[in-house]
Amino acid sequence: MDMAYQDIMINGRTISIPAYYQKVDSMPGDPEGSVPYTVQTENVICFALIFPVDESRALPRSRDALIEGIRQFLGEDQGLIRAEASEDRVYSIVKTLKQHGGVQYMLSYQRFYPEFILDVQAYFEEVGMTGERDTIVYDLCRRQGLVGNDDDPFAGWVADPYDDAVIEGALMNLSEQEQFDEYFPGFPLSMCREFVRALEQ
Image (tube, one colour):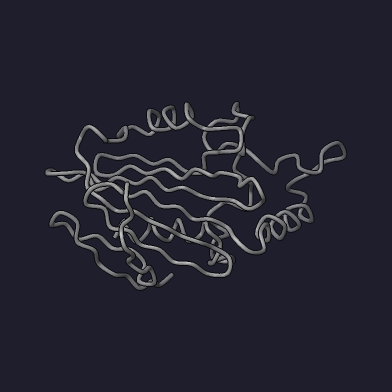
């Protein structure tokens, strides 16, 4: 999937984000040195803050430790979608069910440089007509016998991506798998993963 990028300079380091994001003015209370970017369509609002932090703000460099830390703060309306960790970068994607319908995905991303840590906090929120991706993919899976049974039409629809023993919270559903992003490029989770791919350049 081809994507156009724009380059951003943070503390002398260049990173890439999708080209269609627009830089906006910082707000009071934004982290020092942060650069905000946003984009809005009829289906999604995206907002990203990119800024430098020091080692005291570092996320765990172990995926297991990262997941354990995230789980301690998840509410009943939240669920883990992705957690990745390596020596040079760490990121997570967490889902939150909005009170009046729709979903928000929060990306926390850090890249480790010798002189500082690049921190990205980004939000991808579903607006307008919500639930289309869930509905279409659920119907497809139901027709193929992948979900549902005589007792529960949603059996097999949701699961934690890292631990089957986790059964509480807003668990990841089958429609949120990455394989469906290409069919829903304007969906907030698809745009979140696209943002990650740009950062990984």
